[in-house]
Length: 493
Image (cartoon, rainbow, N blue to C red; front, side, top):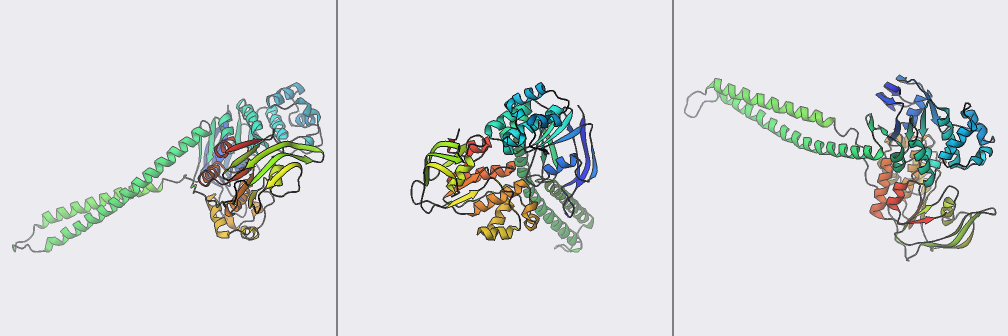
């Protein structure tokens, strides 16, 4: 066991006026399986790159371990997988590689296949195995689930649970629960570490947020009461003081010593009340610093004129002569939220593109209702670039509404002035989701909408769909989201 010490870490990107980190200090035990959480744009990937020495910073980062980063580039993907793993972990024997891949449910035959021919899921597993085979390094694992289907996520989660010594950035709640024993969270004002899995961290955060909100409300009332009390007491003190020189009705003089004593007593009470008020104001100002607003979202689904929006009957999709899925049948009725389930390469995205009018080769019967309006969120968001205003105009959506939704997704106003090419992957995905939420449609078709999206935003989206119950067809490998949202699951094998 050794420690990674971060002291007074301060960092900002060149040309930025805002620090990503400012005087941050904490410690990490290198034996931990550490889940790393925080809203998009808070600096999770940046922090990992700082550990790797990619940027200059103020403060100190000290450790007795070497860091390895995932994902890492493969220089020559035409090489056989075995050759690539041997270059990553040159001291390891072939039998050790085979043993490691068996834990990840990867057939050892892939060792003798060119790496470039493997699926994204297989590549993820193999590259992870390569890093763990090196040994004695602390791994920085950045969102490994984005290329993993649901079954693969469960396999990789069990694999990571058998290891130690890593930071894992992931927003998949079930995945984190399975494999981490500590949570590192980047909050609005600080960074915290808590022992336990994601669910225990989330439960504690909700309790803390609720406690602070209740205390904030109570202190607000107390401050108002003390302010009124101090004003009354000060007024009484002034009134008593003025009476010192006022003649009594009997014509006798007032006891100035007694009146002065009463006035001083009133003034002392007023100052004491004001001090208590100031203390309450100070205590109140320390609350709510790390409460992330998760304002409710809205969507405007259209009502369709008939009881069936679309149907598939024994549909098979082909690439060349190869069938990627076969004999798929389902019907979409108003209020249905169908989740397409299946491994990578099983044709889920192709089915969605076919519904949206894509040029996809298929057999079988596809019936799509007349004048059906579809709002589509594609899987890939990397194409986004340029100004948000121009994007809203080209998409024919209301710019004010579009930006209001992005604000609810934790976009700062400064972000609105940036080129979308400079957005994080999660922020780009939020742009596509915000566009879809601006569109009134009969059916919403979302292809892996949660890739790179932070947990709080996932919960916002779940609450939205639960409240408005739009008709949907979606692909999503986040088991928690799918189980909470889908009314039915279409398995593609």
